[in-house]
Image (cartoon, rainbow, N blue to C red):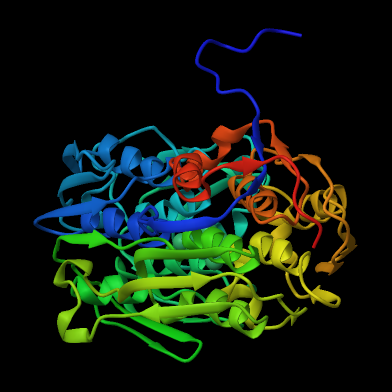
Length: 459
Ligand code: S3P
């Protein structure tokens, strides 16, 4: 076997935390950060976007728009935050004027899908969007199809990346029924709609996060969401505006679950996005019996820097035995990124839990249904794979080597399982995969976990 490269961190072992206490500022919300950067790049004027400890996905979006000339400078602060100074392209029509041939989206589906929509109405020669092995397996026709219906010139490679987009101007408005509730697909169509003549209407089969609508409206576009319908009037010009992106509730969720499951825990997560379309994780954990408090400042006292996104603190206390839960239907899309963590909570709960209607999990950064079930079984839970979800009952906390397939959310979920004693200690072979969303995850773990023990106490 070859030797690890110098500096390669090697496998990470995680044990049971003696206690979980403290205060954390999780990274800025990934979904908001992608949009704050890209939408300001499409706007006219200058803006400063501050992103706390950006992960590789957000850096993929920043890298792509930097390659196209919209980032003037990037300044790091001493807490790992990055201030991006942007000079907008003054509308997507000029975005392809520079003729950038290849844009690397790394592991980030949001980067590839939103960029496809942004570039579809451009005026240049065309760009090819490429990604890593995981992103290259994910479906891209779900974006290319509606963009073509708007008159765009988009080619996928057997339905996947590389995706080539040659700008067409103007596009035409459409009425489109999304086959799956996807904020990424909705966002791509909405961006193309800014360069289209007329009103584009997008109908979703279920609720999705509404960051696209909030941010586009805040930057001056005429965008409305009414129930499951979003309408965008085109052509529209955006005006650049500065914002500080609040923390990511999907990253905070790691600590909500870890503390909720731990017998001796109290954590405060400071300045987290409290967008209602992302709060289902708090509701579900509370339904399971977790003690979580939301401390939102009065609207008048909220930071004006956070733009159109509400934010506040989350405080979680451990010690309660959680109850099983069944999740299905529309709620699933609102929890999509938190489901691996919820699987761990289900693996600790009293009774049998079930997840249905979640086949989207099979086309995320990995097949998250297969991986969650295999890893739950490895740590001793009784886990059954269903075509569109899983069924889980608690079992003995066993030590296990976690199979992550390089998926950040799987690594984080099963590190949490070990910290809170649901697993009897785990080994994560590729701990740096957390960099995609949460580069400082292991530092934060050490900051709140204190001493870890290899073996969890009997539950
Ligand atoms: C995202 C939407 C979700 C989510 C992803 C980020 C976004 O994907 O899983 O991590 O920023 O729009 P879908 O809406 O496509 O399921």
